[in-house]
Length: 327
Length: 229
Image: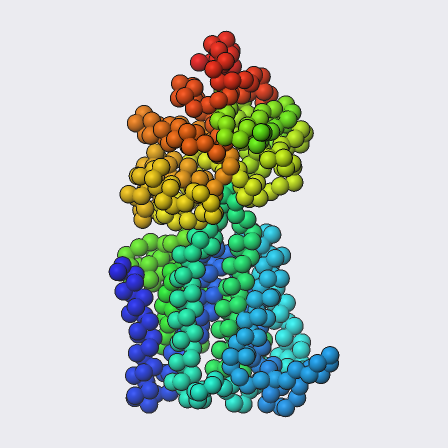
């Protein structure tokens, strides 16, 4: 086992151990924080497929995070109000079932990623960044101006959605759901990176022209990666909305995209557990420094600067004694 | 049976014309040497065949299909494998990952490539960037073979390599030729080795085909005049 594998195992166990300790010690807030880490890490795992593996610097991933959130919010709001989502041409009811909501969140996010990716991946570099950012902001302003679902005030869900056989209102059980989904996403991401598709995507990041000469279209590769990435981030959005029992347009904002990217860079771009390490550090700093000053992001900015300048492999790369990967 | 044919092909880099009237043919299972001094259009001809550079005049056909509107990746899928000049492997992938990334189903797989180049089997998990120049060249050939091409184009595959490595590469090219089934288009300056492998030769001069014929007919008058040998 490499040192990085040990670090990954320690992170996985640590993320499990903290809420278990909090459960025994009756500290539900700590469990909620660990759940938030798991969900944000899941969003990061999604973005890391596009950013780390494919080299796609998307500043619009909040679009998928928000769509996942609103998929949950809209379905649950209709279910709690006993009003159908639509009545024509067929009646579609809302739902409080997490698996159904996840499925809808993943499908909606994937289809939106397909549309955004199909257009934005025809460009590269700063143009790609700007187009993804523009799509995210379009959805942000659309959510603000959509009064049916709360507009600027967002949408509150009174009771957390259900999962068969579990009490999702119990913080440790909801954490367990999020943790299992995170581990599944990490396992999928690891397998994807080693698959012929993942290797070709990595190769396309290094040289699109060389990939073409072996019969692979970089555009199609990247589009599929972008769709997978968007779908996973959308699932994280649905969980995040369920955690807070609230969705608002801020889930679509470019700051959300930036934050997901920041903790990937902090943890280590293209490192499997980079998003987990980054999300944990992000939440820790938010709690530790946020209580001292509302300007705690200044410290985060300094840390980010230090990582980019002196530890480009992020937390994982530095601890593993390796430099940047897929720089 | 003709696999690849170029007929009066012209190509441009911006406004500058690089190919004027290039014509050549490669038959099924045949090895053709593409010769000419530096800057005479050999690499440009290869870029045109691989669709990395569109041609403006003439016709490029592969297995009967007109390649005019075919993008580079589709030309490769049709069976045109390229070993580019300067090796150009994927440096951040391991040897094995370089081969897997390019793999397509067919007769050529990991086992067969590593049988052809046992050094690649020894370096399987090693980063491609850490290989020697010769090993990188073997990897570049192996990667092209993993796409299961019908035509393998080797652009200066032995340039800048140590004599013993060059010998290994030529042995591998000879083995590919001897196995049959695969057509080869080889750009190289080593006439002695080419004579052992190539059936035919095409000579380019300032972006034009000035001579083509059987390799054995490539006389001193031609090599003196066009190749400066």
